Image 1 (spheres, rainbow, N blue to C red):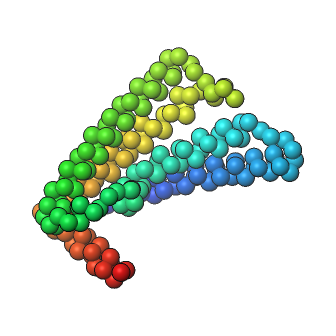
Image 2 (image 1 turned 180 degrees about the horizontal axis):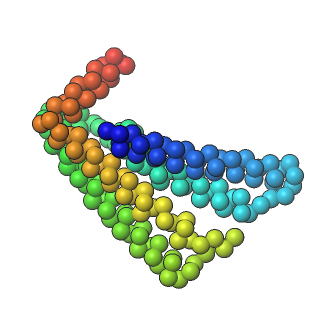
Image 3 (image 1 turned 180 degrees about the vertical axis):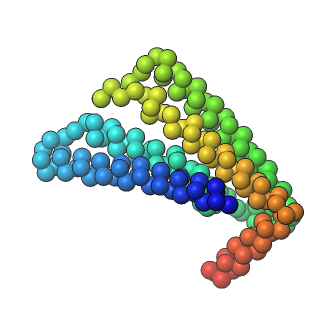
Length: 174
């Protein structure tokens, strides 16, 4: 439990930090461009990197909180017992996707390391830009695994209780 809280905090601070730095750089870039009439290409480039890094680290936070985009129309028509099996299956697919993404991103990082490719504007090493993708994919895969454990734990009773509370909240919201 303590590990999970530290993990949650790490992801939130990490992604929030990158978003804040990216937004701050965008603000500074706008000020330099339009007030001081001094555009800066490095600010534009790094602001994009920081926003993307914040977003990819945020993938696992979104998975943890159930905020990923999904289509529930058919899922909601299933009996709750079948929803449980479908949830296990969909999370296993998520784990598979995360492994594929981590491997592909790792392969890309290795290629950029070997070739020494750098960005055009400021010659920033691209392997550093892309190193966050395999890390983010691994974090996302761990969140899918965490959800599978939650669904299976106690014979699914905790999962069934969460589903019941979500349905009650949806009924009250209508």
